[in-house]
View 1 (tube, one colour):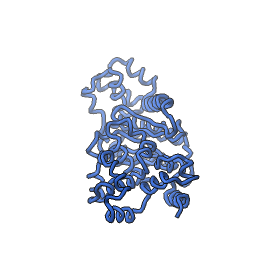
View 2 (view 1 turned 60 degrees about the horizontal axis):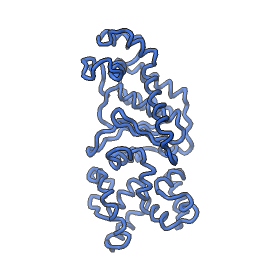
View 3 (view 1 turned 30 degrees about the vertical axis):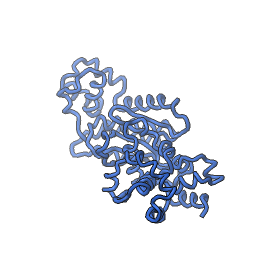
View 4 (view 1 turned 180 degrees about the vertical axis):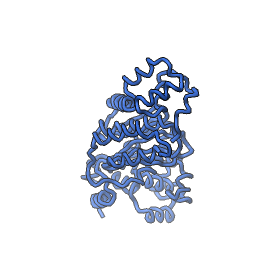
Length: 340
């Protein structure tokens, strides 16, 4: 079967867009779609190759030229959470050397390190890019792709965000479940994926799976205010950045990367827009000024009063005051925050 026919089969079966395929393989469009070069064939085989065929080749001739070339990637591959992936059954437990390299490339569905850098570029600015990319990949495997392009219904999305900000401070309600239902009703996938222990826990990731936008959180607990801020930040990329922007948030820092060539010029603008959107949705500038001008924001009754006036979760008010340096991070008012 020719490379072009194999590509058509993969696109039909997996609903992979041509742009995604090219970025995953790390090849140029011309080498992949026109000439079908040796480089393109090798990359395609690494990303989508047949397990049995590759394993048999390794067993019969472990010192073949192909195996020797793949073994050069071992130091890079071993930076992935190999043991955790093996425990989950995602790569073979007994894989070694070239076989391990093939297994990791196949699990990540990448054809080269260039493909990894292209497709998982949002993780490159971290100290643990392979671990965070593998965590995102676990989420990707859970997402059912859309067959047609996604068009965000802005009014519906904004209405659901306002609902999350105002009305979920009800006893017995699970904020994550409510957020999942609200976003999925708008066509946005909401996932929770267990983080790896080999890197600090991420706050949130946003990416596109084909035509579907995905917001992914770790399964670990987080304050309700920080959860909503990260969620709203990710939604901003859906609403305002149609160029398939992805974003990985670690702590209070988010690192967005547009899935386009040379995105550096747009990064800071996108980040500022997303941060401003999240802050304004949680607490408007006028509300923030009214709260601060009260002058008694260190008192519990002040937080309770404005929570009722603004119809906003009290943890949001406490977090904003802490961000502004008005109250200490170890304030007793932290008990207004709810772990979700």
